[in-house]
Amino acid sequence: MPRCAQDGPPLESQCPSALRIMLVARRCPIATVAGSGSSTNPALQFAESYVTEDLVLRTARSLAREVGLNAVTAGAGAALRLLAAAGNARAVVEIGTGTGVSGVWLLRGMRADGVLTTIDVEVEHQRIARRIFAEAGFVAGRTRIITGRALDVLPRLADGAYDLVFVDAEVTAFPACVDAALRLLRPGGVLVLNGALADGRIGDPAARDQETVTVRETVKAIRESEHWIPALLPVGHGLLAAVRC
Image 1 (cartoon, rainbow, N blue to C red):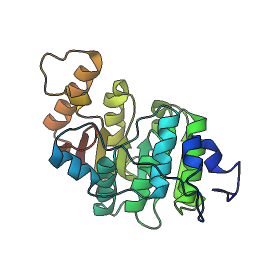
Image 2: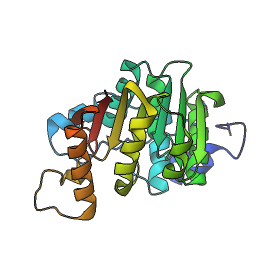
Image 3: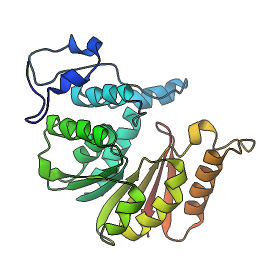
């Protein structure tokens, strides 16, 4: 049985049995159909499937489901890759490693010498992500994987040293993460918040639950701030992208 990394057991042993039977003659070739969000709008569905995911990303997505995570959709991942490539990103911070889905998309848009600093509290998720990054062909030096609470780690990162900050965290952390991103990003750097549509509730004035209110107040504050040039992208669960002035 081929191994997916030099350390630890084969990655395929972490996958559901229904996936193991799909192994063929390549390293860790595990495939499932990638999720594409819950929209029933044909145009949005087409947009989500416009850029397809390869075997590594589909594997990472399957593993995310296995551990109870809701990874960024293919459409959102493609947008992350585009933003990283458009900004010629060399230094990126990701808040929420998960099993590596968004990290692979970001790395594929970054410069060949770029480094992704990714933060998560779950060691097991990061262990999977580390091996996903290796399977995607990224050497260990392309990633800096930090275990801990983002709000504890972010103050230790250098001011104005990053080209992109991607926040895929609990909604309650959004305001603090936005404040941190303002410090971390260089002028012209990009902040991206995942989940900015609040599961479709963002435009419903009757939705007054804490999470929706927090998202609504965060996107409003960014829109009205003199520090950001924002756009709300209706891909995946909603990406709020904002350029630091």
